[in-house]
Image (cartoon, rainbow, N blue to C red; front, side):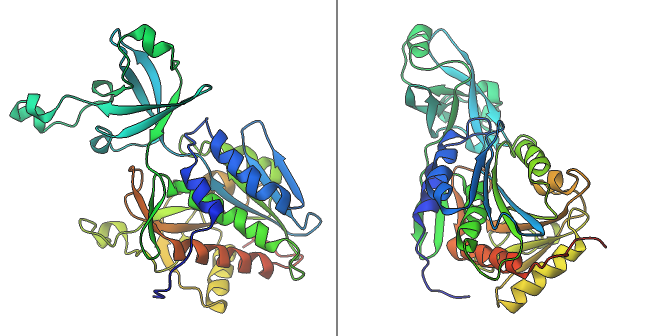
Length: 356
């Protein structure tokens, strides 16, 4: 493994610090708009909130790259008489890590700071201490003294995220609230940015920053219909299993810093898969292999069956502690994913297809 330090790009850092629960992706949209709109030939938006960035617009075949900009979060459902906010979850949460976190409630008036609360351990009996609180047994405390006071600052339906910003913790290893999947958004957008003006590029390449993946790959579903690609690669995060309490017999063997994870299985087109492997080997990019026996839990599952069917691939960036407030990734894996996507795009020639 190369131990040289990778400097995080400002685009990536701004994406990671943007707060964008599913259905409220505005801050992430703003970051993509800022860094990508002027760097590509065609830049478009749609009613789902997706962002489309295209280079070599007259090229063929059509390649779509997708990374989702939404993240897990909380949504305010009820405010009690004392001003405490009760919430539901957006996306999949581990209930054991929700309590005692600083959060930011987002609304039209700005940001409201709060804390996720539950009964303190000192006030529990031995049986209570063994239990994981249900969602309705936790709340957000914004310091309000009454329901009326709380509703002057927030509204039902406001969303919240954990208050956890990007930080490099050692060399290339960094922590953030939502590498899932701001890392994917960065890689697909950075790829089209680097491909702009590349003479060898024959394909039309459209990067899509998709919305609402965490609640059912909804943005990717409509984006595939719009782009109508011949080939597509979803970029998401995958579980790094190089930490305690992860049996590789159950979860596979994936390491931080060992390169992007290339998926193989029914969700993956075999022609595209072989091309990805060939490009990685040619460019001397280290990679890892994942086997998935079913439609993956990513945008790839919607893309593959869009329109008449799309030759689809999936690249995952190794990630520790997925869907917790502190996800850990290696910046080298992110850079190598960009390199692999660029190599794949340039390898495509007129007439290439995924028929097998």
